[in-house]
Amino acid sequence: MLNERIVYFQKYFLYIVDKITKSKLSYGLKFLIGSGILKSSHKRYCMFLRWMVRDSFPDFGFYKSISKKELLYPTDVHIVRLSSILGFSNRKTVDYFLAKSISDYFLQLNREDPLAYDFALSRLGILKICKTKYLPEICEYCELKKVCNIYRTR
Image (cartoon, rainbow, N blue to C red; front, side):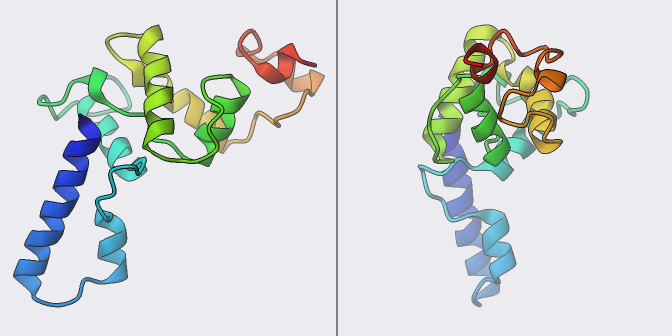
């Protein structure tokens, strides 16, 4: 499981850094590496792996030992909001279980590359195009209105 591999990497990396430096790690380095919590969504690692594993633009496709099917959605507040609006998940906590449920949802749509939709969904969330309420000037032209809970319950 990818999440377990990430946690193993974090703990091993922290162990090696501690062994080499013999001093207390800085806050920034601890933040960058993470603490190795299995229930974490590991957003930074999932995003990095997305870039390194997927092989279509805008990603690089350098890593071949991880399958695109194994990747987890890099979850953040934008994805949480959109996953609720579009009905992928009703979880409010950004954790491994949310990332897994969103990834599983998209795995049903695309067995080979479930993260194919990540960039579009992230941009939609970051740009705040969706206002989380029905606005005809936006919602009537939105291509996601067929699956949108806000549009369906207006």
